[in-house]
Length: 543
Image: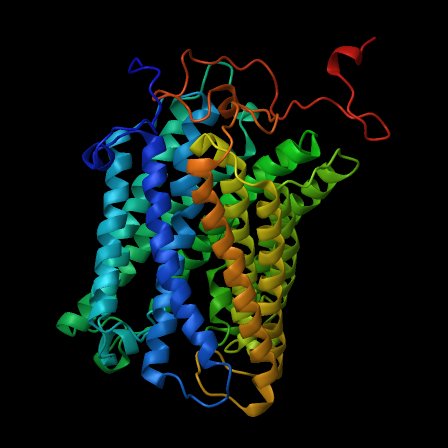
């Protein structure tokens, strides 16, 4: 087999060839297995918390251990799974394929971003092994910078290093999309997944340095006692919150925007229709990225900021919901009278829409000053965050992974098991987190391992749901790994989808395409549907 025709999964390659690869497809696979490791550790921490919360008494772990468990869960899930999952795994794999390029603009920089992620993960894991961190994933000062006896600086260093990997990934994506598109692939012929990743990359490049500066300042205060955030040293703890949330709210869109891009790709494929309102969906990604930088203060309604600032941030938080609502409306209209089939990727993205709508509506409740003051420190916020991040982001990631799995692995997975896993995940998620909305409204505080007995029934339901959700997560791991060895070989385009990535073999050759593709038509050019929803051949349309 010639070097040109050799695919990236060819056997006989050494471990060294993978660790030194500059092939974007292999780097995407390296990210996939890396984030699954961190997801597993975070999931174990979450399982221990849910077991603890089965009973009102703190009879499994002590308070300090519980604090460390939810810190481990939050840090690993946010920075080592949610943020890199779709961009670094699916984005790395499919961006060059979707734009007709041979690789990323900076292949060596792409590999460096993975090494920075791994080095950052090593420091985070080392902090856990040494005894963990008890500050929560938000590292609020002055506790984190002056009073905590845990390994705060080492954990912060891990996030700091991994953050630079995210910056390099975003920079690589921006340059690749801007300069390496195939002939004829104009901006308004780009797939919507590319639009979402471009907007995400801008946020990564602009917002992540703020987090790096914030964690560096916290560490400086902790190590050398320089007064920055600690009031006893003349510092201001609210300044930390401003800096932290200036990054961390746009980080929500780093997590959710790529998921929205996945939904746009999958819905058009399995509804067999062009996306409704392509321009609106594309520009709504840009609008989310821009307005997302202006709403950080809604995390601080109870943090002594002025009522006028609170009102301004409340209005802006309602404003950022508009482009998200546009996406949901356009997805719904794309489904309307479509020739819909319910393969596993489609079930996952329909789950995403349902969960995202619930999370988004409760987000509007939290953007309302009086409601937020009432439920700010309660499980209502936990439920809202997980409906957006886990219900939305993880579900979209699973949808995208199933959609592009034949292209990634060259194999088909068992479709019935894929559908079953998607349904189990949807049921388990709702049973886990919807009772937490009720708990929060009734006043149960978050971040506690003991609680009043009247809250137990909802915690039991939540823990039962977490058990079902765990099965939903475990099933895909089993059958996707099985499919690598025993699955039916995938054709170049098993879904009959549009897009350049489906015009090359599964798995793709080393340089993606034997000849540079030329784009001559609009995106999502599926055969039109007649008035009763049946597929009509385009060639017969003008007869």
